[in-house]
Length: 117
Image (cartoon, rainbow, N blue to C red; front, side):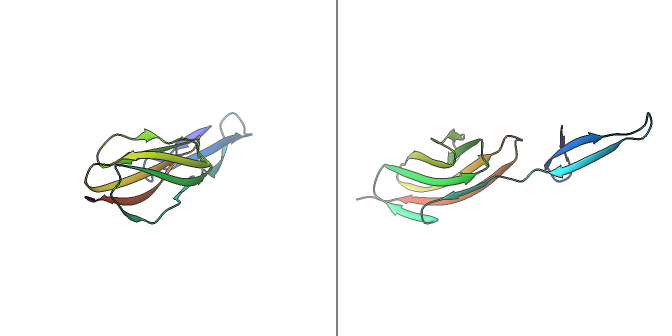
């Protein structure tokens, strides 16, 4: 059974344990967030219009990438993931989100600056 904590935003696993007709116990185990990382420097300069971003995650069911203010797009893979970012000239802030089976997320961020040739 999953329980959502509205105060902290955390999801926890919970299991009912034996009890009488009026008294029950609830064993609660916090759900760990997945871990996500980028296999590159946190700030990159390039003249290329497409950049392959790679990274790793643990305990993630899916990995998503957001470039600037666009919507999140799925990366290819989870444990080892990759994403082809299309870049216009300027600064691009990327947010990488790993989501586990319980819906708990973690994030990694990086910046790519595309300059003229």
